[in-house]
Structure formats: C-alpha cells, structure tokens
Length: 442
Image 1 (cartoon, rainbow, N blue to C red):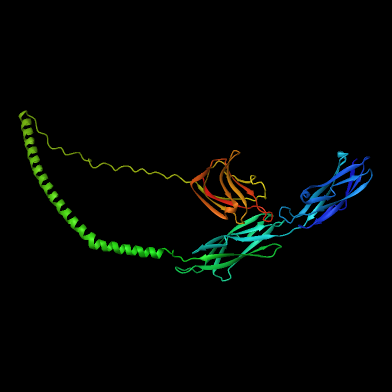
Image 2: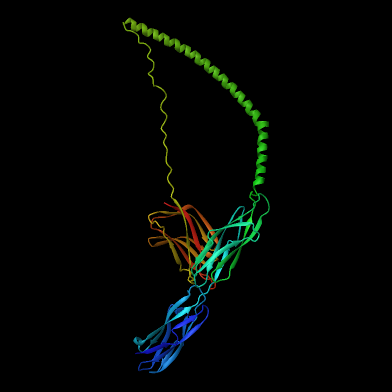
C-alpha cells in the first residue's frame, strides 16, 4: 500500500469571491521513501490548489498539505453543493494512490444589470424599445419590470412585465411608448422615462430612456403643397389663356372637315346604291324571263333562317393566383464564452420544426445590445457541410437590419447556424448577441 490520506474537514462552506481551506494528512504506508503529488479533482478543480503540490515522506512518516478553495464570483459557478476529491498520487506505488472526497457548499449571490436599447428613439406617435436584463449572479432570479414617466405624458405597453433568468442568461423584453398628446406642427419634445427592474434578493435597478416626439406632419409636406398649388395655378392659367382657345379652334376645323367628308361619302354611297339596285332589278327580270321560257317557276324570296344572330361571347378564363407560403418569424440567441482563439466559434443551430418544409428568409435583424467584441457568422448546415452566408464584427453594430432582394432558401433538412467567436475583456463576461429572422415556410 502506497499511502493513506485523511481530510481535516469533509464539508466546507465558501462564498463566491472568497477563500476557504482544509488540510489533508498523508502517511507513507510503503516500505520505501516515496514522493506524493497532491491535486484536486472534480467540479472544484478549476479554483482549488494544494500547497505544497508534492511531499517526500520516509516509510511510516506523515505530512500535511493545505488545500485552498477560491470560487470566483461568476455565473459560471452555480450556488449549491459542489463535490470534490483530493487525489494523493504515489510515484513509487501508483496502484497505492488514494482519493479523499468532500464537498464545498457554495453560497449564492445576486447581480442583475439592465439597459434600455436603444437609449433614444424618435417618433411622432410611438417609439419601440427593448429592455435588456442580464443575470450575472450564480442563482436563478425572477425580475419584474415597471416603467415610469415622471411627467405622466407617456403610456407604456410591455411585452411582459416578468421574466425568470437562469445564471448567466439575459432577457430582451420589448416595450412600446406612446405620447398622450400629439401635435401637427412644432418643435420636437423630449420625454424622459425610467424602467425599474426589481429582482429577488437585490436592490431595485433604474435604467433610463428618451422618446423624442416629432410633429405628425412631415416637414416637407407644406412646401410640397405650396409648390403643387403654384403648379396647378400655372396649369389653369395656361389652359384658359392658350390651350383651350387653340383646342376649340382645332376641334371646330376638324369637325367641319370631317362633316364635309361624311356628306361626300354619303352622296357617293347613295349614287352607288341606286346604280347597284338598278342592276339587281335588271338581272332579276332577265332570270325570271329565262325560267319562264323553259317552263319553270321562279323561286320566291327565302329569308335568311332565324337564329343567324351575332356569335356567342367568348368564354372567360380565370386563373387562380398561386398560394403564398405561411409567414414565420423566430429568434436565435447566442451565449458564447470568451475565447482568445479568433478562429474558434461557438455554434447555436436552429432547425425548422417541420423538416419536410422549405424555409425562405427575407429579412433579419442583428442585435448586440451589450456591445460585445468578436465575430458573428450565419452558416448554412446542409448534411454536415457548412457554408458561411454572413460574417459581421460584433463591435461594428448594436442593431443591424438586413432586407434581401433575393431571399435565402433553406431546403428541407438544412439548418441555420448562428456562430460566435467571443473576444470580450475578462470583466465583460460572455457574448450574448442574437438574430431575429422573418420569412415564410413553403
């Protein structure tokens, strides 16, 4: 047997951002001088150290090693009971190595941040905002939102006034503001308002935004109406002074000439008709005389059979318009860890619920409300073969709209993949951009 190990405490209590420790007593149970390496395994290994990391012991000799636990104040380490093991590895007798197990009861902390995105919006009758709420603590929290206008000049409508956030996640809640009074003309009016975010176990947060109310009538409307009125007056004047007399004179001359032509044509037609009638009568008399000469009775006049009216109207043919696909919209959000390798991306795929359908994307909105740093890509995953459709630097935008003239088409079985390479500074935390898609399903 290589070694025995005993923990001074099997159950430790620690607070995020603080340090706690215990000792492990090691005894060389072998027959030779041995070196023992001490380390921590399990979920706590990332923030635990052993001092000293190695000890040399004679046969039967004991030594003490201090194990320190320094859990970070981060949402990556959730509150609760975290098991660990202290491993004592014998260099002379690896089979005689031992592991002593214990637990660390990690305390909870609450840290919630909130921001109105964008901070200022202009509009004549409404303005749309988003309230971004981040849970940077290590336990789930429920938050409630309450907007307030100190001047009582705005009405608010929240998409929802409550959200449940897991550690390290964010919620984006849409909010629409409407001014209670509107005006046709005048200077813009700034309405400042606050949104209070109340989380369990934390002080209420206040974030501020501004709606800039513009006049209902566009500024270009009155000059355009004045120019249109001047143009109409000029056209009316031109009509009555120049065009109308000229049109009347030309119409009178054309009518007189056409009348003369009609009278002449009628006279010519009358003369031709008289001549044709005389020729027809003469031919009829000659025919009757010839038939009588041979003993035949001349035929009477047979009128045209009834029913020889105009033809039937053409049949109408109606064509049915091709049916459009079913409109759809959805959102894909990322939660990527900080990575110093700019060529490594965390992927967040989206698959259409009905994989037998074709997805057509016509519009998308890129959102980066926290101003993360890194790279965002949109990929097409076709049976494991991925192609890049769009690549954008996160630091280049907060909100970015794309409207395609030629829509993106994803055939049945293909996926949309949101890929993020996060290069935030250490104090900023993870990257949480998102993309909202609009289109149709065919």
